[in-house]
Image (cartoon, rainbow, N blue to C red; front, side):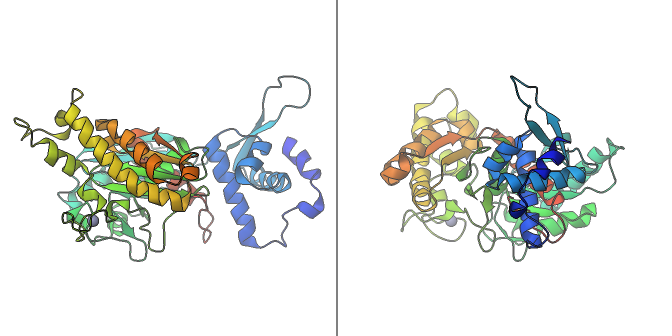
Length: 406
Ligand SMILES: [Zn+2]
């Protein structure tokens, strides 16, 4: 009722009516839906601020979405005199989406409702690099087992998004050569998984999904422009510009691990020389720290344990190398935050200190004065949360209209 009343007060000249192009209207609808699902209960005034749409457009679009049953509103308790503001939420829709995260040593599968709330989740350790076939089979079996626990859900998901630790060429759907997953090179992971589960699948790079995860529910929730840096087996980044993921022409934007920093440096797995990853990666840290007597057979966790000063310096140096590249990207892209995640940050906090020091040193002063380097809020769940967020966005987009923020 409240919303219908607001609608009648909108001046006719400001309305987004049927004469405006269809795609513009759909874009406004998607902006509003995404903002509501991302922020939880939100007032029309806050919606106007976060989307940049006029109050009149918000009123018109919200009225339409409430009429379709996709958005519900509740009055906030009044704290004083006057009418309490309306708070809007996404209506829980029938149907579900699937998010899947393939790491190097684990597979996580989650079912979520159309608002992104997780309904069921399964995590399993597996050497994902060893056999793409076994990993995809396991993901399909996990999904079947999860769906079997929820007889209340429809048989087919509304949308499925999978994350893989490698760059996917979005013109071919193939993982690019030189990927972190040697057994997966040239594979079309989305098509392979789709054949196993009988539903369409969207595949996305895990750093991109982690950026979307932090944007949807983590440290990037209220941030329009940030870089997400994933420091793990390799180094990757997800670039969020104006609230949306920037993928580039072929979907491989953000591959900062292969920026050359030493012309005559070591050979990189990508075929080039002196890439950032040759001096900053889990494998590089292991190779250095194993040079200490008695450390030859230790894993990274043992090598970095107990506040080892040597590990602290190695991680700080790696952070500075990453930060040197991130500084140049920052001077070009002008983000508000650098959000850092990935298991190398969990292993040693000195990594993030090194990144911050180099970003501060090598960006232009007016950029570094505004720029903060912070740790991601979602830890290792970032990619799974991003997969769910992208799946929700895809499921909520009408056919033929791409999701605007994902
Ligand atoms: Zn390389």
